[in-house]
Length: 515
Image (cartoon, rainbow, N blue to C red; front, side, top):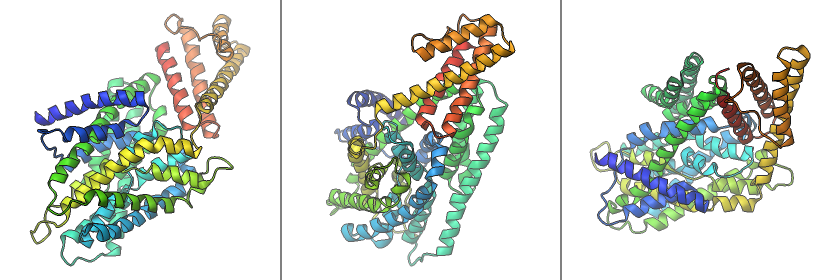
């Protein structure tokens, strides 16, 4: 009952925090970390200890799946080279740099220092996606940041397992062939299982028309991908990401407008609750971990700042030469893109879950030296990135000149909407020529579309139209949906515009009722 009470309290707290975050136009995730930290510092509040398995199994799969579904596969194809380099090279470079720095400034044993480096090497897709939702970044820049955070799990997980194995086993040596085989098993096996789960879910959803069953299947899919991959001793996180990317690309073909709207509403609630809990936990954990530090560890704040500075420096040096591939327009300096990509690389709950899973004892039965300090430094760096980088990311984006102006987004959406209406009118005129529909019905729909193009009236009310008119309106919406996908495939509109207009078409189709 205590755990249930804590979760309910965190949800209530998150609702209040989200309200203020929207009013102040700051990331809710950053305020949630500060709120959790403030609650943990209140005298008498019991220490919070969350099993890492609970975070990994209950919280991460749906959050990662939702992030992966939002990833634009079209834009990903244009930046796959820098994403691949960052997801591999930057993880190795960050782990090595943090490991050497930790040995120098913290006094940790070398093995535990490199465990810390592996933990902090990767960015967190949950945190990155939560921060990125509120920023109007160009499509390629946004997908670079989001895709890198989604696909670097396998690399960091292999490094972490190798480092932990060395730390707990006295005299252990690193076997590169074994590490490479483990990487292929984790990353490759997780990818195959994720693709298989996506294919199976695709076949099931094609034959399902009940909104309740569709919603249940969508909620169960990330957990199924994670559990099956973990049972096969591969990367559950990679499996969830691959399944989410594949199903996110084809999901609009599997469901109708009613189901898509319902799924969107349900997932919005689930993501809000889970993100609220998980970011609050980050703040709540830090004071309890600090109280568990051994004597003589009072310099941990300075050490955490030094490690955060190392991470940022390595990220700048790594992203600068790569961001030329994602330069959004001519005349933009690549260092501006590098600055945004660097500052958006926050750490989050995944490094915390990894650090909590470090064994308590070594293979000889003695306590694992340095584990408490590793937990504190990991949590402190996570808090630093979520608060400092999260609260200042919007300012960095604005200063870089990369942020898309609201007028640009509105103009792109308006032009795309007019293109859809023109395509619908062309289809109506073709039907009129063929005399395939009653002239009165065709004229009614034609007037509604013309009024939209003139921006002077809305279309007809779907609750009063007759069956023939509804049938024609459904057909027109189908034409507009096909035109929308054509505009997107031809790179004439952004992924955000496509999602916004598709949502409008779904709402209009749902209002018409069954054709």
